[in-house]
Amino acid sequence: MDTNDEGSKLHHGQAKIWKHLFGFVDSMALKSALELQIADIIHFHGRPLSLSEISSNITNSSSPNIPYLARIMRLLVRNKIFTSSEVRPGHGGDTPSTILYDLTPASNWLLNNNDPLSLAPFILMENHPWLLSPWHQLSACVREGGIAFQKSHGKEIWDFASQNPEFNKIFNDGMECTGMITVQAVLSGLKSANWDGVESLVDVGGGIGATIAEIVKAYPHIKGINFDLPHVVATAPKYDGVSHVGGDMFDAIPSAQAIFMKVLIFAKITAKSCCFLISPLYFLLWGDT
Ligand SMILES: C[S@@+](CC[C@H](N)C(=O)[O-])C[C@H]1O[C@@H](n2cnc3c(N)ncnc32)[C@H](O)[C@@H]1O
Image (cartoon, rainbow, N blue to C red; front, top):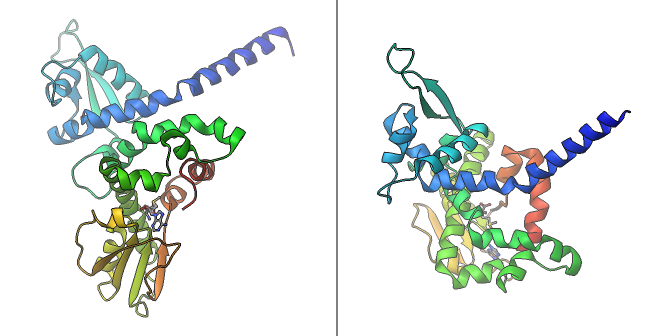
Protein backbone atom coordinates (compact mmCIF):
# COMPACT_ATOMS: atom_id res chain seq x y z
CA MET A 1 0.00 0.00 0.00
CA ASP A 2 1.57 3.32 -1.01
CA THR A 3 1.29 6.65 0.72
CA ASN A 4 -1.42 7.84 -1.68
CA ASP A 5 -3.67 4.95 -0.69
CA GLU A 6 -3.13 5.82 2.94
CA GLY A 7 -3.88 9.49 2.21
CA SER A 8 -7.03 8.62 0.29
CA LYS A 9 -8.28 6.32 3.05
CA LEU A 10 -7.68 9.07 5.56
CA HIS A 11 -9.67 11.56 3.45
CA HIS A 12 -12.51 9.07 3.02
CA GLY A 13 -12.51 8.56 6.76
CA GLN A 14 -12.74 12.30 7.29
CA ALA A 15 -15.59 12.57 4.76
CA LYS A 16 -17.47 9.85 6.64
CA ILE A 17 -17.09 11.74 9.91
CA TRP A 18 -18.37 14.97 8.30
CA LYS A 19 -21.35 13.04 6.92
CA HIS A 20 -22.28 11.78 10.37
CA LEU A 21 -21.34 15.02 12.09
CA PHE A 22 -23.99 16.83 10.08
CA GLY A 23 -26.44 13.91 9.95
CA PHE A 24 -28.99 15.96 11.91
CA VAL A 25 -29.24 18.43 9.01
CA ASP A 26 -31.21 15.85 6.98
CA SER A 27 -33.80 15.58 9.76
CA MET A 28 -34.03 19.35 10.16
CA ALA A 29 -34.46 19.90 6.41
CA LEU A 30 -37.25 17.29 6.42
CA LYS A 31 -38.90 18.99 9.37
CA SER A 32 -38.70 22.40 7.69
CA ALA A 33 -40.28 20.99 4.49
CA LEU A 34 -43.14 19.73 6.61
CA GLU A 35 -43.56 22.98 8.54
CA LEU A 36 -43.50 24.99 5.30
CA GLN A 37 -45.97 22.47 3.78
CA ILE A 38 -43.90 22.21 0.61
CA ALA A 39 -45.27 18.77 -0.36
CA ASP A 40 -48.84 20.02 0.22
CA ILE A 41 -48.22 23.09 -1.95
CA ILE A 42 -46.90 21.03 -4.89
CA HIS A 43 -49.64 18.41 -4.41
CA PHE A 44 -52.36 21.07 -4.37
CA HIS A 45 -51.17 22.53 -7.70
CA GLY A 46 -50.88 19.07 -9.27
CA ARG A 47 -47.72 19.95 -11.24
CA PRO A 48 -44.03 20.72 -10.65
CA LEU A 49 -43.48 24.21 -9.20
CA SER A 50 -40.69 26.77 -9.29
CA LEU A 51 -39.15 28.21 -6.14
CA SER A 52 -41.07 31.46 -6.51
CA GLU A 53 -44.35 29.55 -6.95
CA ILE A 54 -43.63 27.47 -3.85
CA SER A 55 -42.60 30.53 -1.83
CA SER A 56 -45.68 32.53 -2.83
CA ASN A 57 -47.81 29.75 -1.32
CA ILE A 58 -45.96 29.58 2.00
CA THR A 59 -48.30 30.65 4.77
CA ASN A 60 -47.52 32.93 7.73
CA SER A 61 -44.81 34.84 5.86
CA SER A 62 -45.17 38.05 3.87
CA SER A 63 -41.82 37.62 2.10
CA PRO A 64 -40.28 34.15 2.31
CA ASN A 65 -36.50 34.04 1.89
CA ILE A 66 -36.10 32.37 -1.52
CA PRO A 67 -32.30 31.82 -1.43
CA TYR A 68 -32.74 30.08 1.93
CA LEU A 69 -35.57 27.96 0.53
CA ALA A 70 -33.39 27.12 -2.50
CA ARG A 71 -30.68 25.70 -0.25
CA ILE A 72 -33.13 23.58 1.72
CA MET A 73 -34.70 22.30 -1.53
CA ARG A 74 -31.28 21.46 -2.93
CA LEU A 75 -30.56 19.22 0.05
CA LEU A 76 -34.02 17.65 -0.08
CA VAL A 77 -33.57 16.91 -3.79
CA ARG A 78 -30.13 15.44 -3.06
CA ASN A 79 -31.86 13.23 -0.45
CA LYS A 80 -34.54 12.23 -2.99
CA ILE A 81 -37.40 13.73 -0.97
CA PHE A 82 -38.26 15.94 -3.99
CA THR A 83 -37.11 15.95 -7.60
CA SER A 84 -35.88 18.94 -9.56
CA SER A 85 -35.71 19.48 -13.30
CA GLU A 86 -34.38 22.40 -15.27
CA VAL A 87 -36.73 23.82 -17.90
CA ARG A 88 -36.15 26.57 -20.44
CA PRO A 89 -39.37 28.43 -21.22
CA GLY A 90 -39.91 29.36 -24.88
CA HIS A 91 -37.45 28.52 -27.67
CA GLY A 92 -34.82 31.22 -27.26
CA GLY A 93 -31.40 29.85 -26.35
CA ASP A 94 -30.76 32.83 -24.07
CA THR A 95 -33.93 32.52 -22.02
CA PRO A 96 -32.98 31.85 -18.41
CA SER A 97 -33.86 28.38 -17.23
CA THR A 98 -36.09 27.66 -14.25
CA ILE A 99 -35.84 24.78 -11.81
CA LEU A 100 -39.12 23.00 -11.13
CA TYR A 101 -39.64 20.86 -8.03
CA ASP A 102 -41.92 17.85 -7.87
CA LEU A 103 -43.04 15.15 -5.45
CA THR A 104 -41.44 11.72 -5.02
CA PRO A 105 -42.84 8.58 -3.33
CA ALA A 106 -41.04 9.86 -0.21
CA SER A 107 -42.58 13.34 -0.18
CA ASN A 108 -46.06 11.83 -0.46
CA TRP A 109 -45.56 10.76 3.16
CA LEU A 110 -45.27 14.44 4.14
CA LEU A 111 -48.77 15.35 2.99
CA ASN A 112 -51.21 16.76 5.53
CA ASN A 113 -54.26 15.78 3.50
CA ASN A 114 -55.93 13.59 6.14
CA ASP A 115 -54.61 10.51 4.38
CA PRO A 116 -54.15 7.90 7.09
CA LEU A 117 -50.88 6.97 5.40
CA SER A 118 -48.94 10.10 6.35
CA LEU A 119 -45.83 10.34 8.50
CA ALA A 120 -46.31 14.08 9.13
CA PRO A 121 -47.29 13.90 12.85
CA PHE A 122 -44.55 11.34 13.54
CA ILE A 123 -41.88 13.56 11.91
CA LEU A 124 -43.01 16.55 13.99
CA MET A 125 -43.00 14.39 17.13
CA GLU A 126 -39.57 12.85 16.65
CA ASN A 127 -38.00 16.16 15.68
CA HIS A 128 -39.52 18.12 18.53
CA PRO A 129 -36.88 19.51 20.91
CA TRP A 130 -38.58 17.61 23.76
CA LEU A 131 -37.82 14.32 22.04
CA LEU A 132 -34.48 15.35 20.56
CA SER A 133 -32.86 16.49 23.80
CA PRO A 134 -32.72 12.96 25.33
CA TRP A 135 -30.45 11.88 22.44
CA HIS A 136 -27.79 14.15 23.97
CA GLN A 137 -27.78 11.87 27.01
CA LEU A 138 -26.57 8.66 25.32
CA SER A 139 -23.04 8.82 26.70
CA ALA A 140 -24.33 9.79 30.16
CA CYS A 141 -26.55 6.68 30.03
CA VAL A 142 -23.46 4.57 29.34
CA ARG A 143 -21.50 6.20 32.16
CA GLU A 144 -24.22 6.31 34.79
CA GLY A 145 -27.04 4.09 33.50
CA GLY A 146 -30.55 5.48 33.70
CA ILE A 147 -33.06 6.68 31.15
CA ALA A 148 -32.16 9.43 28.70
CA PHE A 149 -35.62 11.06 28.73
CA GLN A 150 -35.55 11.29 32.52
CA LYS A 151 -32.06 12.80 32.48
CA SER A 152 -33.24 15.46 30.04
CA HIS A 153 -36.61 16.30 31.54
CA GLY A 154 -36.34 15.24 35.18
CA LYS A 155 -39.15 12.70 34.89
CA GLU A 156 -40.15 9.65 32.89
CA ILE A 157 -41.81 10.18 29.54
CA TRP A 158 -45.30 9.02 30.66
CA ASP A 159 -45.24 11.34 33.72
CA PHE A 160 -44.02 14.19 31.51
CA ALA A 161 -46.89 13.51 29.08
CA SER A 162 -49.45 13.36 31.88
CA GLN A 163 -48.36 16.83 33.10
CA ASN A 164 -47.87 18.48 29.70
CA PRO A 165 -50.96 18.45 27.44
CA GLU A 166 -49.00 19.85 24.48
CA PHE A 167 -46.44 17.03 24.63
CA ASN A 168 -49.24 14.51 25.26
CA LYS A 169 -50.93 15.59 22.01
CA ILE A 170 -47.74 15.69 19.93
CA PHE A 171 -46.78 12.22 21.20
CA ASN A 172 -50.21 10.61 20.81
CA ASP A 173 -50.68 12.05 17.31
CA GLY A 174 -47.25 10.74 16.30
CA MET A 175 -48.07 7.29 17.65
CA GLU A 176 -51.50 7.32 16.02
CA CYS A 177 -50.05 7.99 12.59
CA THR A 178 -47.53 5.13 12.77
CA GLY A 179 -50.27 2.94 14.27
CA MET A 180 -52.48 3.58 11.23
CA ILE A 181 -49.68 2.54 8.89
CA THR A 182 -48.95 -0.65 10.83
CA VAL A 183 -52.55 -1.70 11.26
CA GLN A 184 -53.15 -1.53 7.49
CA ALA A 185 -50.21 -3.93 7.06
CA VAL A 186 -51.47 -6.18 9.89
CA LEU A 187 -55.00 -6.30 8.46
CA SER A 188 -53.87 -7.05 4.94
CA GLY A 189 -51.36 -9.66 6.22
CA LEU A 190 -54.10 -11.36 8.26
CA LYS A 191 -56.77 -11.25 5.53
CA SER A 192 -57.07 -15.00 5.43
CA ALA A 193 -56.98 -15.36 9.23
CA ASN A 194 -60.18 -16.49 10.85
CA TRP A 195 -61.27 -13.83 13.34
CA ASP A 196 -64.66 -15.51 13.91
CA GLY A 197 -63.71 -16.87 17.33
CA VAL A 198 -62.45 -13.48 18.54
CA GLU A 199 -65.31 -11.57 20.10
CA SER A 200 -63.30 -9.11 22.16
CA LEU A 201 -59.84 -7.65 21.69
CA VAL A 202 -57.89 -5.28 23.95
CA ASP A 203 -55.09 -3.09 22.57
CA VAL A 204 -52.74 -2.62 25.51
CA GLY A 205 -50.91 0.70 25.26
CA GLY A 206 -53.21 1.49 22.35
CA GLY A 207 -52.75 5.26 22.56
CA ILE A 208 -55.84 7.18 21.48
CA GLY A 209 -57.40 4.08 19.93
CA ALA A 210 -56.99 4.52 16.16
CA THR A 211 -55.42 1.08 15.75
CA ILE A 212 -58.14 -0.90 17.51
CA ALA A 213 -60.76 1.24 15.74
CA GLU A 214 -59.38 0.12 12.35
CA ILE A 215 -59.48 -3.55 13.43
CA VAL A 216 -63.07 -3.20 14.63
CA LYS A 217 -64.01 -1.43 11.40
CA ALA A 218 -62.66 -4.42 9.44
CA TYR A 219 -64.23 -6.98 11.83
CA PRO A 220 -67.33 -5.31 13.29
CA HIS A 221 -68.27 -8.39 15.33
CA ILE A 222 -65.24 -7.72 17.58
CA LYS A 223 -65.78 -5.66 20.73
CA GLY A 224 -62.71 -3.42 20.88
CA ILE A 225 -61.14 -2.12 24.04
CA ASN A 226 -58.48 0.56 23.89
CA PHE A 227 -56.40 0.46 27.07
CA ASP A 228 -53.83 3.12 27.93
CA LEU A 229 -52.80 5.47 30.72
CA PRO A 230 -55.65 7.71 31.98
CA HIS A 231 -54.19 10.97 30.56
CA VAL A 232 -54.00 9.34 27.12
CA VAL A 233 -57.51 7.87 26.93
CA ALA A 234 -58.89 11.14 28.34
CA THR A 235 -58.05 12.76 24.97
CA ALA A 236 -59.15 9.84 22.78
CA PRO A 237 -61.93 10.42 20.22
CA LYS A 238 -65.04 8.22 20.16
CA TYR A 239 -64.93 5.25 17.78
CA ASP A 240 -67.84 2.94 16.93
CA GLY A 241 -67.42 -0.41 18.66
CA VAL A 242 -64.49 0.72 20.82
CA SER A 243 -64.50 1.51 24.52
CA HIS A 244 -61.62 3.39 26.09
CA VAL A 245 -60.29 2.20 29.44
CA GLY A 246 -57.65 4.11 31.42
CA GLY A 247 -55.28 2.35 33.80
CA ASP A 248 -51.80 1.01 34.42
CA MET A 249 -50.99 -2.24 32.62
CA PHE A 250 -48.71 -3.24 35.49
CA ASP A 251 -51.71 -3.25 37.83
CA ALA A 252 -54.30 -4.94 35.61
CA ILE A 253 -55.60 -4.94 32.07
CA PRO A 254 -59.24 -5.25 30.98
CA SER A 255 -60.23 -8.82 30.23
CA ALA A 256 -60.81 -9.76 26.60
CA GLN A 257 -60.49 -12.88 24.47
CA ALA A 258 -57.37 -11.60 22.77
CA ILE A 259 -54.66 -9.06 23.55
CA PHE A 260 -52.94 -6.85 21.00
CA MET A 261 -49.69 -5.06 21.85
CA LYS A 262 -47.58 -3.08 19.48
CA VAL A 263 -44.55 -0.92 20.00
CA LEU A 264 -42.39 0.20 17.10
CA ILE A 265 -43.38 -2.83 15.05
CA PHE A 266 -43.88 -0.44 12.15
CA ALA A 267 -40.12 -0.01 12.00
CA LYS A 268 -39.70 -3.76 11.62
CA ILE A 269 -42.06 -3.78 8.69
CA THR A 270 -40.77 -0.71 6.94
CA ALA A 271 -37.07 -0.74 7.72
CA LYS A 272 -35.81 -4.00 9.14
CA SER A 273 -32.17 -3.06 9.45
CA CYS A 274 -33.01 0.33 10.91
CA CYS A 275 -35.23 -1.26 13.55
CA PHE A 276 -32.53 -3.41 15.03
CA LEU A 277 -30.32 -0.38 15.52
CA ILE A 278 -32.94 2.10 16.62
CA SER A 279 -35.27 0.00 18.75
CA PRO A 280 -32.79 -0.80 21.52
CA LEU A 281 -31.82 2.87 21.63
CA TYR A 282 -35.46 3.85 22.02
CA PHE A 283 -35.78 1.78 25.14
CA LEU A 284 -32.69 3.51 26.44
CA LEU A 285 -34.25 6.87 25.61
CA TRP A 286 -37.74 6.39 26.97
CA GLY A 287 -37.27 3.43 29.28
CA ASP A 288 -39.17 0.16 29.05
CA THR A 289 -42.92 0.27 29.08
C1 LIG B 1 -44.62 3.70 22.27
S1 LIG B 1 -46.33 4.01 22.56
C2 LIG B 1 -47.06 2.81 21.47
C3 LIG B 1 -48.43 3.20 21.06
C4 LIG B 1 -49.05 2.25 20.04
N1 LIG B 1 -49.35 0.96 20.64
C5 LIG B 1 -48.12 2.07 18.84
O1 LIG B 1 -47.39 1.09 18.76
O2 LIG B 1 -48.11 2.96 17.98
C6 LIG B 1 -46.56 3.20 24.14
C7 LIG B 1 -47.95 3.42 24.69
O3 LIG B 1 -48.02 2.74 25.93
C8 LIG B 1 -48.68 3.56 26.88
N2 LIG B 1 -48.24 3.16 28.23
C9 LIG B 1 -47.03 3.39 28.79
N3 LIG B 1 -46.99 2.87 30.04
C10 LIG B 1 -48.21 2.31 30.24
C11 LIG B 1 -48.79 1.63 31.37
N4 LIG B 1 -48.09 1.41 32.49
N5 LIG B 1 -50.06 1.19 31.26
C12 LIG B 1 -50.79 1.41 30.11
N6 LIG B 1 -50.27 2.04 29.03
C13 LIG B 1 -49.01 2.49 29.09
C14 LIG B 1 -48.26 4.97 26.50
O4 LIG B 1 -49.13 5.95 27.01
C15 LIG B 1 -48.26 4.88 24.98
O5 LIG B 1 -49.51 5.23 24.43
